[in-house]
Amino acid sequence: DAGVTQSPTHLIKTRGQQVTLRCSPKSGHDTVSWYQQALGQGPQFIFQYYEEEERQRGNFPDRFSGHQFPNYSSELNVNALLLGDSALYLCASSLRYAGGSTDTQYFGPGTRLTVL
Amino acid sequence: QKEVEQNSGPLSVPEGAIASLNCTYSDRGSQSFFWYRQYSGKSPELIMFIYSNGDKEDGRFTAQLNKASQYVSLLIRDSQPSDSATYLCALPIQGGSEKLVFGKGTKLTVNP
Image (cartoon, rainbow over all chains, first blue to last red; front, side, top):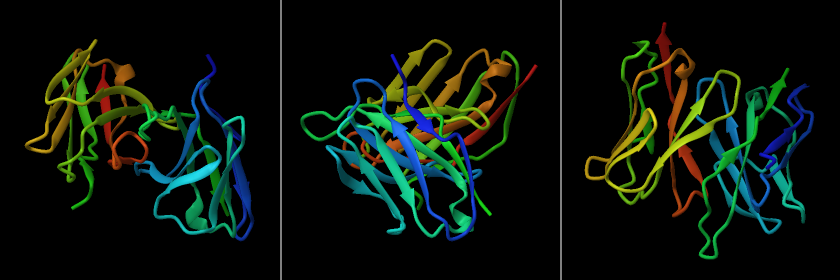
């Protein structure tokens, strides 16, 4: 049973550039959430995708956008990178219930983004 | 008041001792609580979740929930050096686990 996978593992960009991170959910899961974890902090919720639509969003600017594909995989895009965007980006997958709540979230290994 | 607060530590215990990790939260309506373990440079790994008041045991781990006091804790019995990690408390903001809010984590070191 494949767990959550993310690519790439590490990425180095310069200020102003754009980046795309990718995530494949755990087998059987249909919901993908993205989190940003700065050094020494807990993960912070960016947004969540279900049925190819953004369902919830945290307190992140529009520079952060995403997409979900029919196979439930997802991308996180960040435009106009800032030094402060350097962090570990985590993807978490879960299964959505009929009532709208979701099952436990399982995290992928993360993508370490460094902005110089 | 922050939504989830944890003592960032570091917490240091000798091998074989009981490690006690604590978390307080502000939303009285919170129904479920999660403990994740995160090794340095790795992603969070779910180790326990608890929904009901009282204790929930899983091997060497016990989660304790007191909704009246808005307090959840994690006890690790017979601590091992391999338990050395950062422990994150998290709770969902909207019903299920749609949006998890995390504490900053408590760094635990178990000394051989």
